[in-house]
Amino acid sequence: MKKVLLVILALNITLLAFCSKPVVQTAEQEQEVKNVINDFYKSFDLKDIPALMTFFRDDFMWYTANGMILTNNKFAAFFSPIFENWKYVTTEVNVFDIRIEGTMAVARFSTKMQTDIKTTSIKNLHTMVLIYQFGEWKMWHHQESMQ
Image 1 (cartoon, one colour):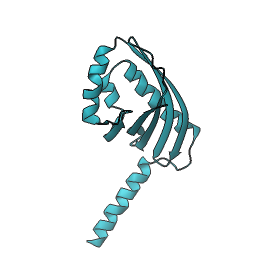
Image 2 (cartoon, one colour):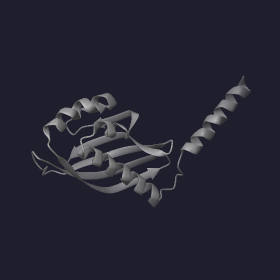
Image 3 (spheres, helix red, strand yellow):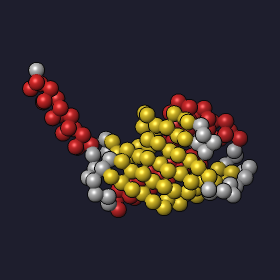
Image 4 (spheres, one colour):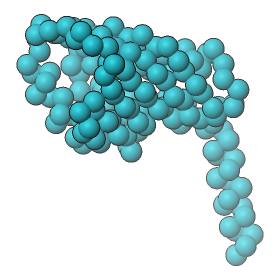
């Protein structure tokens, strides 16, 4: 029985090792994370909720500036009525810090959004945590705040 458990444990560790990235942060990894963020906001600007959902892990959490917590199933319900009120939206993203360690990345960035209704005069500050799993970066947590 102990040998079976050891074999299962060894297989799990081996599998995790192949799904992981090295601990050393590279410029390539930073660019991958930036691409995920930029692609997410391209989908946001298109108001494409199904596309947005592909960026999230199953246990994703979005913390809004007003203190709400949106899980995967609440994200669409929150943003759908907002998107319906906007004829268009454009988002300018400025990524200013990415820290990667192992399979986790923390990105800090600001956005300035413009819609047919208004342009935000306040920078929206974001902290996004991404996890590298099965060959891609997925958003795990997102915290939004105002400057």
